[in-house]
Image 1: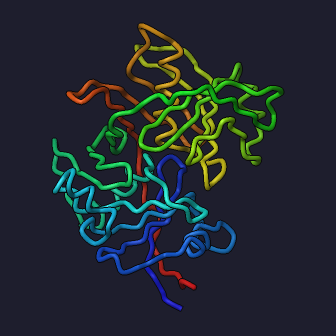
Image 2: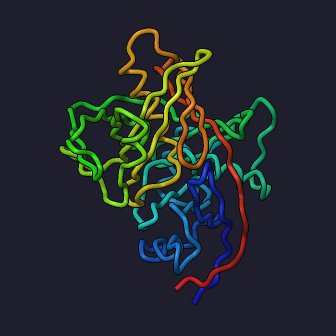
Length: 290
């Protein structure tokens, strides 16, 4: 057996096993990732973040072509071992790891570019920890219906892509949100080609110019998680769309693991959406890799 070093981190309860592999020498199988993320027999986590230099893996070539300063690539894997395009909470935790271990620096007023399968994401410091620019977003065509245990009838959803796919469903009350049973995977019809994370939201109005939302999420390849960074961005975008003209561009999204900030802002290439919140490293250790 091979022993590897790891660190455990989380962003509002969305937790990750972090493995440093700067030179891209570690080839983790889906089963190995799933074993590391297993909460009973492994370390436990909603996913795994492999820290690797962009120049050391084929997927990093696109990141370096987009931004030569994107030295580090976030190889994100879901808890079942499958690869995912992006993870908003994971990107902030990834940045925290780079800074705390001395692999990167982030001077005041600057941005740290991180390579992902959804392109390069710029991370900056924020009052609550870090902010990641998720880039341009788009609303997906189609009118999916979502069935979930605890809901009497199927509900319409809105497809939102923020580097990875989401379907956002509005609920009528806090009671519906709380009684929803997400131990059973929701059924999305039609299902996007690569699946989707499903967010269930209850809008809570606007206060002091900031929109407020409560949310629960079922992540593909994982199940219900305490938080989903890209999911909070998708939720805010969907609720703003439903609210119509005059809706704010700043949002606070309450998830079971805490609160995250979302803001939309114009750029030369189109509107971007950014996610802000804390990132915490919990402990480090070594584990035998079967």
